[in-house]
Image 1 (spheres, helix red, strand yellow):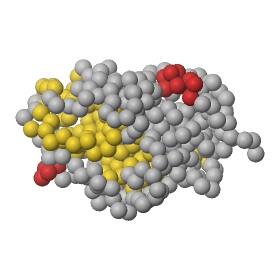
Image 2: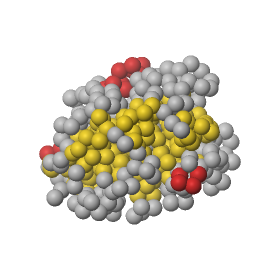
Image 3: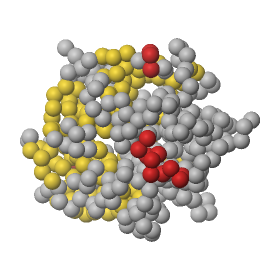
Image 4: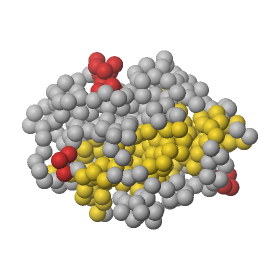
Length: 394
């Protein structure tokens, strides 16, 4: 067995551009797969030549956004939108208003104002949660933070930073980050490996390359897997991640699922499990951007396999498990945005197995986020354009 190849992050200034996250792409992908679904004991991939295309109509709802990174719908039907540059926008009655008191954002590379989510009992408690890159704390640069606040008279109030990853770094890649709640009201959020792949993801005493689990007030749940372990980051729920930018609660399986950016080849869908190690960078289906191997291992006894991986990488961002009756052909399946290839992807599910892929809205632009709103409609945030509604087929 060939020894694992470790390449230090001397290419940090170029790697985060090459993965598709910032609009670049590479043409040297890993070896082509056969015409059939590739399946080992666990993960599969479906070749590009088997991907079908279906056209949907859209309606522009919020025009003229630069990078609407995250969005959430308030009970009155209005939308809170995070612009990566640092603005928080409240779109109501056809008008965009900038909310005052948004957190101070460290904008660098992939870092900026990231996700936004409502507490499951928002109507009674008013809590809104944000992830963003922050320069607060130890060291030069920034790292990912989680804040909660309330919205009153177009102003954020009662602001509390619930978690701040450290130390800071001036590297511009892999901040994550998405937010989700499970059926028990526990809060999950992701932080990417921050471009330090050889230290952060496999070390539970370090932030980065992790999915975290907190109580909604920011306290650590007593049943988190690393509570009481010496020097462990007790908020960590799973580790060995690269850069999760999609997170859902699958209501059929009662699980948190993430998708994450791999290197060249090897974007993954992972079912988050307590204490699970997803292997990055010791195992991966991807390779370095210069075509050299990262490792010759794609699985191992100490690691949890993805249920699906993309080859070539699509640079996924935004994730939805469709439950709406408005789209019977999509119900029970997954939607994920593609930054690299600029479409919305439909992944058909049979339990936890992806059985088919389909391109929706091909050529629409870099899809940054996709959500199913309380009204049952699906909304898609497209960089440089805005937010569009996916119109059901007649």
